[in-house]
Structures are given as structure tokens and as C-alpha cells.
Length: 108
Figure 1: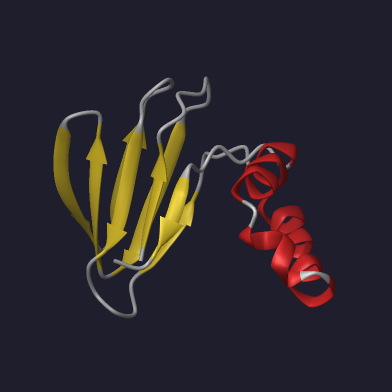
Figure 2 (figure 1 turned 180 degrees about the horizontal axis):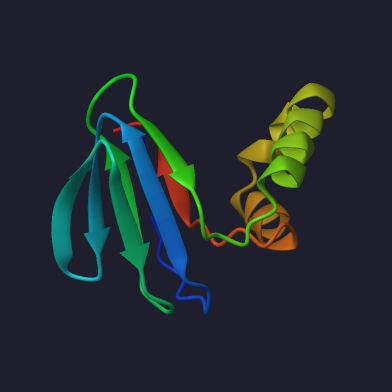
């Protein structure tokens, strides 16, 4: 599973790796973070992360995304009109509406 933020935004990001191993690419730097690591991402940095071990657990400690609202919106659309989630422009608007600046996610 991976996630990318290719849209520079003014928020500082802070992630705590509770378990497992996650690879980060921040601008041009690539590194792996392990259990009990804190990863700090400066504002206006493009970055991505990839889960390298099953069972990994990470917490977003500094993001401004309204994650619960976003997840509830996604669940409602998946139930009521799943085809709408195939429209990339619609999904991008939904993400931005919830202050989420993710530009890509999925499985590799």
C-alpha cells in the first residue's frame, strides 16, 4: 500500500510509526522508518510513503485532514453511487473538500 502527496501544501506533517516498517520519499530523500520512529515532513514538501511489512501501524500526528469526515464521505459514496468514485476529478474534489492533499494511493 502506498500514498503520495505531490501537491505542496503549507501544513507540517508528523507521523509516528507504532509497528512495522514504512518507506518514505521526501523530495529526493528515501528512507525507511521502523517501530517507535517519528517522521517529520516540512511544509511544502512533496512526499510519498509505502508500507513494507504486513501489520504495520502508523499514526498521523500532525496532519490537518479531516480524516473521519473523509472516510464517512467515501463510505457513503461507495454504498450509494460506487461508479462516482471511478471519476478522478470527483475524488480529487472530495479529498480537497476534506482538507486532504493526497494525490495518489493504492497497492503496488
